[in-house]
Length: 407
Image 1 (cartoon, one colour):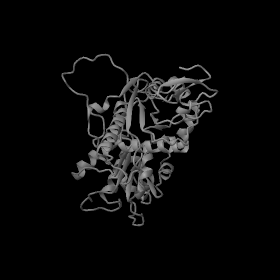
Image 2: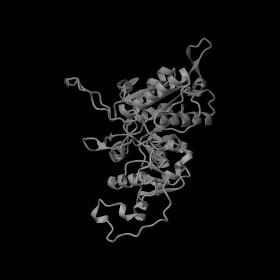
Image 3: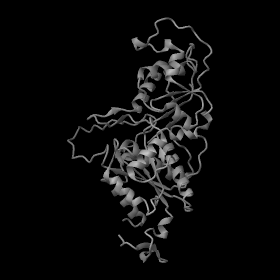
C-alpha cells in the first residue's frame, strides 16, 4: 500500500517502485490487461440488499473520478428482468454507474442469433417477455397466452380455463417458426403442452400430423440452473428443471432427443465468449489499446459460475493450441476471435457455496450431477482456481496477482 500522494510505476528494470504524484492512478495502471466477470446474486447482493464487501470492492475498482479502473461486466442467470432495470439497480446499490451493456442476462447472447430474429417465435417465461425478446432482436413473437387464446382447445389441464363450448377451427393463424425459452413460466403445464404442440405440428398447433417432424423447429433456451436458493431453507426449481421436464416429455412421446440451436446462460461457453466480447468493447471505448488477455470470473455457485469459467478457460487453451472454434451446445456460426488467453475462477463464500466441515463417509457415493445433459460432467471443472471469503478479497487477490496497487 502506498501513502496518499504516491503511486506505483514500473521502472525500466521492470521493478515496482513508488513515485510522487498528485494523481492516485498510476500511468501503468491506466492500461489494464485483465477484466472481471462478476456474478450478482450471492456475490454482490442478497435479494435487494448489497453485500458490504461489494461496496469495499468497488471502492478499489473505481478511480477518483468514479470510473472503473478495469473492464467489468456483470453476468447473471436471471432473465425475467430488463437489462437497463438491473443496471440501474446495481448503480444504486454499488454507488458506481453501471451501463446496461455491462449487464449480461441469461438470454443476452441470443442477440448473436440473427438468423432467427425475423422468424415467428413462440416465447416462454415471465416478466417483460415481449420487451426482452424485442431487445434481443426478435421482431415477431407470440406469447403463450396469445397462442392459447387462438386455440382454446389446446389448454385443457385447468378445468376452470377449459372452453365451455367447442371452438371453431381456424386456419388464419400464421405458422410458428421456432421457440424461445427465456426463463421459467408460471403455468408449467400450459407451457409444456403448447410447446409440445408447436414442435409436434411443425408450428401449426391447430392441426395434427401423422408423424412428428425431426429435426424439429429451432429451439433457443437460456438458464439451465436446475435449482436456486431463495428465502426457503431448501432449493427452488429453476429453469433447468423446466427444461428437464420438456426434454423428458419430448423423448417419451417421440423417442428422440430435444435439440437446441442455442443453449446459453452460465455455464455455457457462449455466455463467457459473449461476456469477453463486451469486456473488449468496454476497453476500446475507454481508449485502452492493449488487449485484455486475462479474465477473472467471480461467483458463488460451483455448478454454474465455477464450472462455466473453468470450461471457458479450457476452451481458450484448446483454441490457442489448435485453433478450435467449437462453442459447445449451440452457437452462432461466426464469432469474433478471442483476445483472452485465460479465465481464472474465483469462488466466494457469501452465497450458495459454504465451506463445509468434514462429512461422514457415504459409502463412496458421488453427489448427483445437477448440470444440464448437454454439458459433459467433469468434477475437476467444479474446483475453483481460488476460494476467498468475499468479492472484496477476490479483487485484492487479482490486484496482487497483476501487480496493481490496492487502497
